Structure formats: structure tokens, C-alpha cells
Image (cartoon, rainbow, N blue to C red):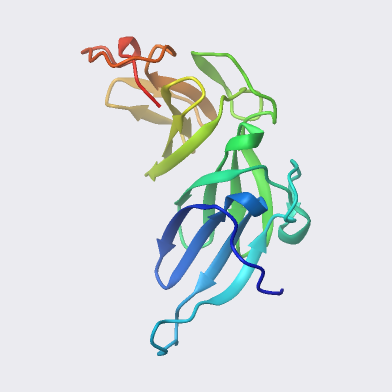
Amino acid sequence: MGRPPLRFPAKVSGCGTRLAIADTGNHRVLLVSFAGKSASPPVAELLAVAGGGVPGFRDCLLDASLFRDPHGLAWRDQDHLYVADTGNHAIREIDWAARTVRTVAGTGEMGQDKTGGQPGSLQTLNSPWDLVVDGSVIYVAMAGCHQIWALLLEDATVFGKRTFNKGTCVCIAGTGEEGNRNNSYPQRATLCA
């Protein structure tokens, strides 16, 4: 693993002494560590690379997997990182321990669905930009349709109101129209992305 330069790094996310970097322009995600380094400034050790450095959409082992413009990153635990694979309109999971990449939501094609409700592997997405893991829910900022979506990792109740089955990917806020309107009903609000 050489040390090619970063190209338009979009997001970083830390877990312990490790840092994941969305190297967006190189269509890959890097895992680095600062553990045991006492240099000033600190020097990162490259632990692993997910993505082949060219755009594409492939689930498999880390070095053979392909991404297209990855952006948002969120850790579930020390081995599992979720990636907003913006150009592939998908949410991907990197398992650093097993050294694999798999798609958990999205089909690889841009969708126009503004409601959702399908299992993740069948649900089309529209430019997922960033995400956060909160317990058993991945919240996704969907830049292409100006909405917030939820991907359920387990059966869960979202906002204490709506219950969804494991694997469901659904819009929870925003009409899908660009705007700036607050509303007590989240799906009637308009959001700017």
C-alpha cells in the first residue's frame, strides 16, 4: 500500500485511535491509526484502504471494492463503518475486521422516491451526503432530494412514534422539495441541502 496523496477528502470520522477518511476524489476510504506515534506533528500509519481508486460500484474484499465519490462516514463500532457513497446513491458498510464491503441500502442508481419504505437493498436513494449512527438507526442526509432518511439496523421506533422493521429505509423528514419551512409534522417540512 503506497502513500498516494489525498484528493478532495470530504469527511473524517474517528473511533479510538483510528481515523477513517473519505478520499472522495480517489473514490476510496482510508483507515489510519495514530496509536503509538509520538512524533510531532503526529504521523498516521495507513492500516487499510477500501476502494480501488477508480469510480465504480462493487461489493467484495476491501482492495477489490469500488466506490464513487464517498462522502459521509459513521462508525457503528470499532470494526464497522458506514459510508454515504454519494455517486452510487448507496449506503455501504465496511467491515474492517473481515476486510469486506457490502451495500446496505441503495441500488447504485439514482432514485426519485420521496417516501421510501422498502428494504435497503431494494430502495433507491438520491445522493446520500452524510450520515450518523444512533443506536440501531442510521440517519441519512439525502442531498439529492432535500430529505432526512432512516435505515433501520434492527426493528426500531423512530422519534418515539413510528415503528419500522429491520432493514427498512424510509424518509422521516422533508417533503422532497427544496425550501426552508418549519413544521410540527417532520415530513411536511422543507429542507435545503
